[in-house]
Length: 437
Image (cartoon, rainbow, N blue to C red; front, side, top):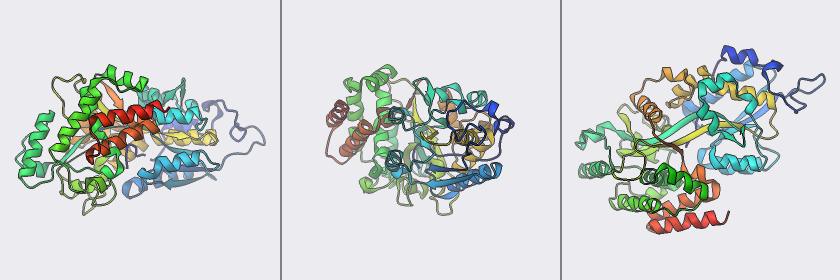
């Protein structure tokens, strides 16, 4: 599941105290939620997430069951939508009478577009002082637009390179690459040892595009990156240099055969599956990858030799050293969702106990500060440390650019991988898509 996964469980004292208590609830004009005499009370909600299998799906099933148990008479109809289909189905549903009441939110310009189209309910009232303290003000602000909160953040999942320590040992690689030159050296050693260096699920486009995103993060200064996203004009040479760096990587032939028809996360033949079964040594992916890989190993157990390192630096470039890119995930209420019930569900998702269960189910760092104390895996601790010490943090570029321009960027990267375009074609494609908006 890409760039968003999720959480469960019992209720914190603070949240329990608010459930069903008008004084803790936001002001509302929804007659079904005012609690006024004779007003109907919502008893059913629909809920979409993207955990279709394994512990992740079980996690959401448990969360829903516990929420229903704490809300007698309420039914939550959960639907797991495959990640690659999620955005398309959601867009269709939000523009129909069958919009899910609660759904996974990727944030960024995609969320802004939903707000501008009147498809979301303002959830500012669901964010209490407890959420602000435990989730962090920065996470709340990431889901804020036009001075209102439109999603409850539940995760920040930075990207990085996952690798098999056993295969690195077999190839004689004694230290994780710190620079792109180190990465090229590791690729050469792995190829010499008969090991496919990097797995890539280019069929889904976005995993291929992540390579360009990261190279751009390394080549461009934070100011240039932000200004370009704002102006939607890719004019600085750093964007072209990132494309040329990707051309150099492709020329080194680090990826498996058939990368253009390989999915990212579905089945043993996916890029995650290749790493899970020691058919490739590395994969560039978000912090959710350990959980995906666990479901794809032969015994459905965590990959014992799985490790992680930050995306390599490019010495002398304009990118901020230690800059991080990742996905801020959360959950939104659609415009017609029952307000109070939806708010209580959002609050349940992010309380500490739920976030601990979320971490255990998906093997990802939780967002809730209290839940972070439960994390033990070295790779998750390294990911949290990298995020905490990052000099600059950016959301995924396609999320920041919005659906149309983001898709144009992802497609152009795949074209480059397929030999149908170069760095300049990539820049021209993105600028052309932006010019149409």
